[in-house]
Image 1 (cartoon, rainbow, N blue to C red):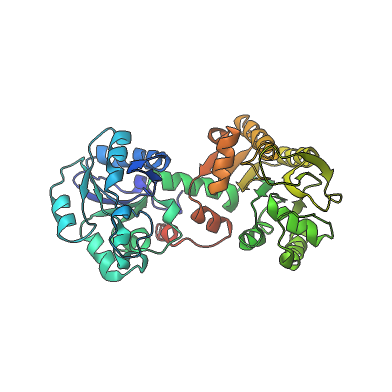
Image 2: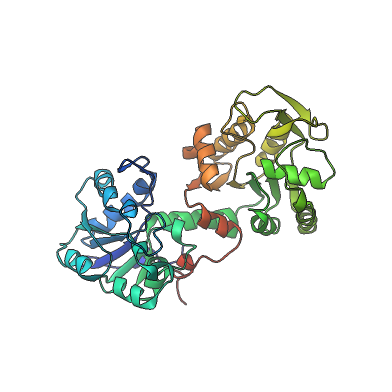
Length: 400
């Protein structure tokens, strides 16, 4: 991790005001947190910094208020869940800058924890406004970024602050960067990437970047249908972006030139209705009935994917292989996920996964905990895979 400054480089934090950017954009219902996963991930760093005698000041966004103060986007209802997971009290300030924030910060003692109100209540946050970043920085001595999920945004609290205070990656950010480095930047080869999901259009940049970086690329989910169509196969009434056939052909050609083996489904589970337990049949991909739609990869495809995973040392996974939310069209995703997890547990595979549907799919398969690393970052994880520089990460790079 020498490329990035981490808490190991921060020196003594006793008595220091540590502005820590975290992701508390958690799902809420009736004023209560319904999934505390993101809270649980940042708590170890909050505890570590507080236990070192720092005065911890948490910065976070919630929702998309676009510079307007709306009660539904307040972070105050998150405080009880945060305090419960931390096992210690958390103070709250009704603003992230100005008199309310200044008073709350001034009242802190060593080891105390304070959550400031939604940074996006101020238009200067998303604009990365210099004056707003200065106002945030005025209440800190050190900056810690523990929100990889927001690192693809050049906002005041994710990028601007890193240029105004000594800046370091938190432990979760550090783990994410280490995992992604192992996955694509400096991986053990051969590398296999598994990319699924509904549409090619949302993953063109991702596919074009991966064919030049990995040894094998599995394309699954609805997006595989566009590639099958581009190869002249009839896909019935399957989800298919026929206008992107030329793009798919270009990606296939780029893969061949780069020496990247593309793995597409060879058989499919097809049904006439998109619903759970719909009557279905397994057919070769060149024999999909006209009135049917492909809803999952078939067993021969899974066997080919699993054999490819056996020949790899690193796996990068983004997206499901089929309509995993609907049984029995989850079979391919579950089978491949369990196989990858078993290889990982046996020490034969480094497996890095991320993206919203991916996390849900791996949880559905019951194997998320067995992967080397599962990112909850969504957009930031995707942009990293696309080969894009992330402003919040670049600001933490070690100089020299």
